[in-house]
Length: 364
Image (cartoon, rainbow, N blue to C red):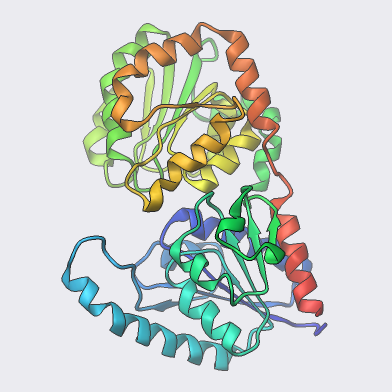
């Protein structure tokens, strides 16, 4: 293997695609300090901000997904695709990667396709229990597919699949040692139980509306709340910081501390969140977003709930929230079994296992 290797990584659109890509890059950088990295993302998407913050160079493609309804943007799609394919070809010609890695999102389609056409070893990582359109398209062209769930043979060639789990923040493995420090960090009352609310980095309207409607209920139950409302909704909910038992954050940067401080977690069911929550091992109530492709968040949540490891409430059934949550509060045995069962589903070595597969492709 060359002393210095060039590694191309493409994925984005959401944190669920970006953070696994960065985690893979960080592990590769530990093993190959002299390696050169180049990310490829979609212009105007969050990866153009998050990847440089993590210390990596990124180039943007003019690419976006097809809207479900008829729009002017859909008419532009063929032009965006051609532009992205041509730019990806230029990037590969100039950067000359030894391997190309895709973590999903529309930008990874042109980049990985061009890499495979240039006979470059390729690997994709699929976070969800129901694959995205890009990874389904790439499946026959890439060398290896790392997945986080069982039964993906319906979508991918069986001989290419390796179940690794999703890359997660490695500091989560030590949160059980940070309880006191995390309570001090958030200035929380050590005599109260803490509810952590996660609606994704941008926020979730229905989850926010639910929490707003239940603040009196949480107070009556002697609970305190760390509420990540998302940057889109921050202005609307900042007023609740005036309540002594509520903390509203547009985004929680110290997520390890937030997990360590929490006793109960209310969360969307994006793939990365589900993988992290398995490692965290706290009682979880999932409220999946119904507004995602193929309802994959519900499928992600069900894969945990079916192991009696979490509770699921559909958005259409949120009227039952107070009853369901109060029942959980009053049942320590249920809390313990949920914690134990969700921990049993964790795959904490996912990043290492994925990078081991990348190493094999590099050596071949």
